[in-house]
Amino acid sequence: MTKKKGPNFSPEFRLETAQLVVDQGYTNREAAEAMGVGYSTLGKWVKQLREERAGKVPIKARIFQI
Image (cartoon, rainbow, N blue to C red; front, side, top):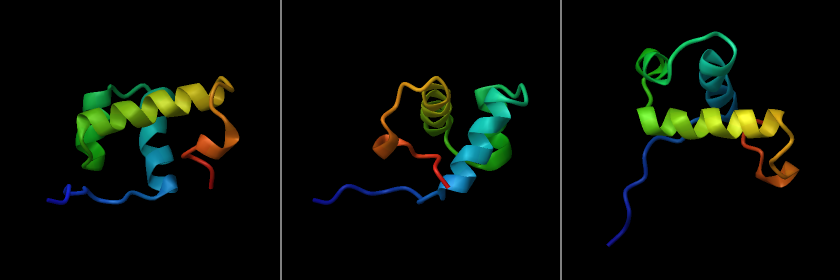
């Protein structure tokens, strides 16, 4: 049995969506609804963006590099 995968979002879209929370003051729920993504998915993107900005993520693991 194969695992069903969700939509594949571009790095640009993930960055833009996470920035709504980190830079523009949206709540995770508001940004997720506005951009049409899952709440938990956005939470992962926000966490990743904050870690990248703090320098805690190895360069190869960065998901927001454009």
